[in-house]
Length: 196
Ligand SMILES: C[S@@+](CC[C@H](N)C(=O)[O-])C[C@H]1O[C@@H](n2cnc3c(N)ncnc32)[C@H](O)[C@@H]1O
Figure 1 (cartoon, rainbow, N blue to C red):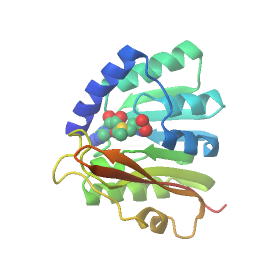
Figure 2: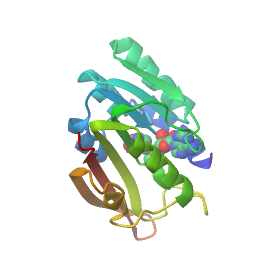
Figure 3: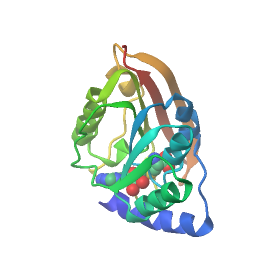
Figure 4: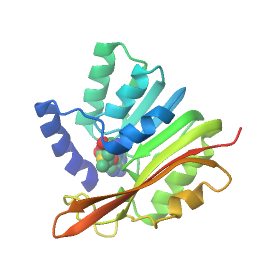
């Protein structure tokens, strides 16, 4: 998992600096999380910790040992209803249904087929009345070397909203950031509610 190796190093540096800040996507989806939460690709767990602090019971998964250890250490220290597990999400299948399933910045690290299998799995495992919160990359491949040639996927601009046909779209937001080599990175963030 080249992407996990990349983030493993980044997370070690961020942990050493004490850099544990919610990113703008996490800030945007946090108010929508409630109940039993599954987070796929939790990274350093800033969102998982914030969700647990507001009363959610959170299971958080990531491939990075550093990330998972940091999340569990914080959860134990703060007495939060949160557990993190190291998992290879390129083969993982969700077991159980959740009030909220969130995945920020993960699906682009898989080839198209796998990205769609996991997205479909998320869609199937949200309880009626529950929400899915998904953020993907739609443009830009200069992702610090974390995106492997042939093993990443840029979603089309409306692909995520199309995947949630029949759900209520609570948030649909496109963000653009400058990237190396005079390029841009574009992201789409969607929070969708399964009708009860
Ligand atoms: C862009 S980071 C996003 C982290 C966090 N959600 C955030 O918004 O800060 C991508 C995350 O996906 C994880 N990841 C990438 N590929 C993975 C895989 N095959 N299995 C498990 N985790 C993976 C990385 O370790 C990293 O934590």
